[in-house]
Length: 420
Image (cartoon, rainbow, N blue to C red; front, side, top):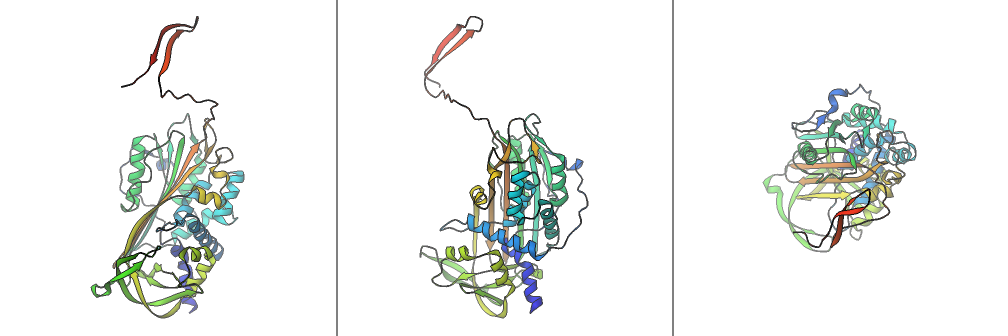
């Protein structure tokens, strides 16, 4: 029993991040116009370390706590916490002072970013990706080629090449860059997510992006006779007609407020975990009471017993801006254009560098053959803009003049009352 429980204990991080990650430095087939700087940045050899229970517990707690903050009321929700963790960890390599301390507390439980780099490198490298249980990850960094407004630090890029295999692109931050980034995202999520940005603001100087894709076939696929018509009751009591997939499973999980089962994917590397709150317990209340440690415990203590399981077919996508959630979890200065300290990332004569937006997109499809899931996390870095004391908006009739500066006499003078 110990070996069985330990096996599922070791799986929990992949389960708690919604089965969303493997480390793969291999690039995808794409043609981008941006200059790939990896030719000048060779990833140095990094030694793997032991992925201990401290890291697993911290990552599980981060995963559950983040999900609590971003779960939307009365609609489906889906995130890949490890995707978010990786994108923010790359960003944290550019942080300093209080900003770095806040990121270390949230992302690494108080350990250093340098330690987190080693843990994440080792963890994602040990996650398997095989036929019928594919799990791939890609990281990229895109920064402005305007050296008059932004200079990136090579040490920052080197660390992210070493530990995250990040591709680095120096770009003009125009329409071409938008197409390049979205193409990169589409290629690295097998087309499940085809866009992460639709414009680039003038004050944006860098994007740090993590993309994840999972494609797993059930170990025991559902046959035609296993699919029946069923009914699903939504959050507001509405009855929905669904296709229900029936199976006999052998791993049962429970706590005082919920029951569920675990269903394996082929190769036994990954599993699908379900938890159904008991009658009278709302999904919101159940998730509110959940912790990462408790989730670890539930799966570690799975019982080997017959389970008659019914799983509806479903498919949906989810988009969430994570700024407020991350602020609530402790990243206070990172989003403050005046107090953020990302001096180890780069510098700009135009102002201070801060995190402008963390945007997350996810997709999942569960059917009789298996599960496909994808996620993308974008961390957008921007430069503060100087506050102006006055605003003049010429959006109604106005007078204009062309004057001789020596005498200030008007050479031309006129009014604009209409523009066709």
